[in-house]
Length: 287
Image (cartoon, rainbow, N blue to C red):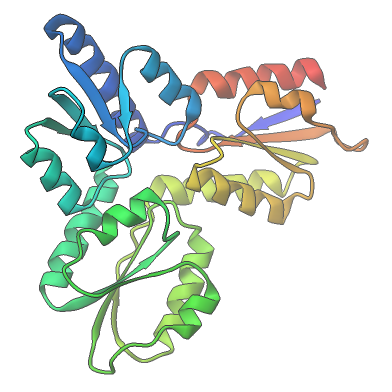
């Protein structure tokens, strides 16, 4: 059995930075006896979030929850939050440590400045994803989220409107270009800022290349991870036998095609190295 492991699999810079931030604060809290909260799961990986909970970190899902929480430190998740959420947390008296991915933070600044200059905002991405909700919350003007070709085709606005297009950092690069192409044909006054991060693009390109050259493809990541879902979509286009798993335990349910001799493995940006290694080792044992 030949295994091809993607070199780009696993934590990206922004995720590692966010996770390291929480573990650093855990150590400080033990010395200072303070409470630590994350506003939303720090990343979209259940195993990491559960480990943090076991060490005393509480995940806060809404501003209302904070009303019943003792004072402490609130760590902003890697996906970021809206400006109003950030300001409200601060007004409640909590210390804030912002672990928003720097690439996401750059989109916040772009959206804030462009909307201040009179541009309506178009975000290409998943409208229910926390990153997109956070980006939307930094706009001062009308903001539209577009996630597919039908929504791009149906989009209309005032003819004299100025539009600024940005993207969720983990959006499918090919789809982004297609949606921008559709919007461009409407002849509006549009500026496009490609905010898909380089790490996402490189990960998607490598996943596509590996998936096209193997018999079976395994994509590892949390079920709520947007970038892992995109990897699965990309790999499924290239390899008919593509599997989406969270941990090595899921290998028990997998069945390979009789003709499968080469297995490819990639993983989302929120997947820890130890989980990738466990899957790689157990693939060799199981198959």
